[in-house]
Amino acid sequence: MSTEDEFDAFYTATARRLVATVYAMTGDLAEAEDAVQEAYARAWQRWDRLAREGDPLPWVRTVASRLAVSAWRRARNRLRAQLRHGPAPDDPGPSGRSGDRAELVAALRELGPDQRRAVVLHHLLDLPVEEVARETGSTSGAVRTRLSRARKQLGERLAHINTYDEGMARHG
Image 1 (tube, one colour):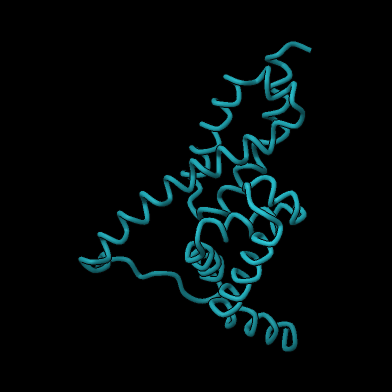
Image 2 (image 1 turned 90 degrees about the horizontal axis):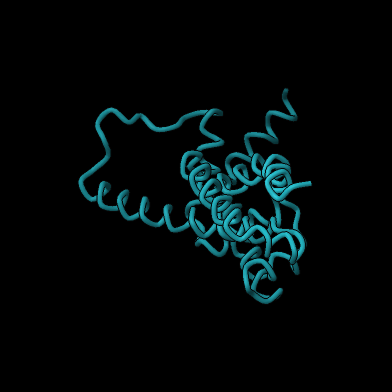
């Protein structure tokens, strides 16, 4: 198999899930797609070394995550500046059940980047704590602490969604 074919197969097998992962971290699909495409472009430039070293996915995921978080920070700073001047007059905001997804994304955005990344890698990708630690350059203890604090914060922020879901299950 040629280098190009090898890279194409890797891209085809991993890109969709990686976009979903980065989207979960950022809550912005366009930013996630851009970050993932840039990460794959950078991976292509280093493909021989990455392929030789083993599984290139953690490297690509780390690069995409870092790119997306940088973009997210820029967007957050723009949003803060906008909020100082008040919300747009025609922005009704999410409501009802359709707002649950938006609320989850908003709650994830409230987490610090390290907590959000740990939550996505561990809970959405089902990576063990030790692998999350390796990928983030942290200790297992630090990852466990981030996960614990993030779960507490998300639980408090999203408690009404769980209550609604439980009520629907009993009465639905």
